[in-house]
Image (tube, rainbow, N blue to C red; front, side, top):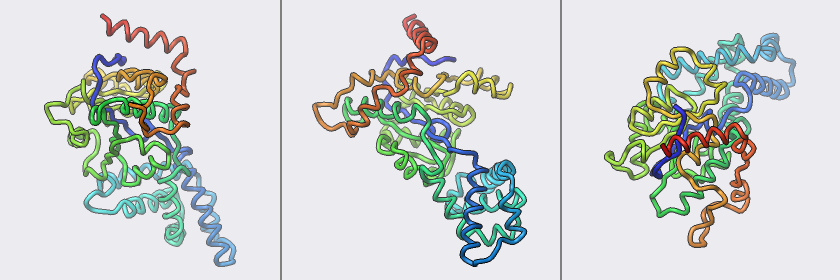
Length: 333
């Protein structure tokens, strides 16, 4: 169902990371192919020799083929060593296997991959931990900053903001590099927890991080926002949280028919974009949030300026304004 404005203030609001707050800037296959070409070019310069036939062929490998091979390698590694190797492999070793199989699976010579991995893998691994590869989704900064400013107006511990993500141990540093890390009270990854969404235990651990007792957990107190129904929505709903599904009408149109059966059977709410989050959890308007008691609220002047809703064009569109007025009418009834 569509989301309604919260009647009471939640104690905990968490976000999914990939697809909700941030995204990869380009297709993975293209990023991998470009990294391989750069590595081969460096190898050529180092040995002052022309590329071999196998190396030339590697430079021409189809990035789409790499992307498909990556998907297969990623799925196989997830099955063999869940949660990015938690308890069995380091994150680097876990990803090293995926990178190697992505190239080999796309038709790159095993000898070429083996020779290039010492330079190629660190380049890719570090790239996927930085803004070189990732970018924030449009509404992310404004939404998270507005919630952080709201939190600053409340007594300590009254509102906790966090991230629950099926990600490896690079995520906290990545969120820092994207400029969001300082606004979160915690970042909980599946790698750290040892299990992943939609498991109930990762949501229970998040509520513990917020200092909530089991009896305090309810849809009124705990909210999780994510763009993936099978992990974010199912997991939060089963854990007794308020599950908010970020999905535009176009995104819904891309779902398989069976997904709608699960949606009909699962308690959740839908918003068409992340920009609606502050409103549905009851956050005051950004312009009504001065620092508490005249103290520093942890946000710079630049941050405060950006909170004057950088996505006002999206949120003030007549169609979406009417959509939200309809939610208010529904709550009033």
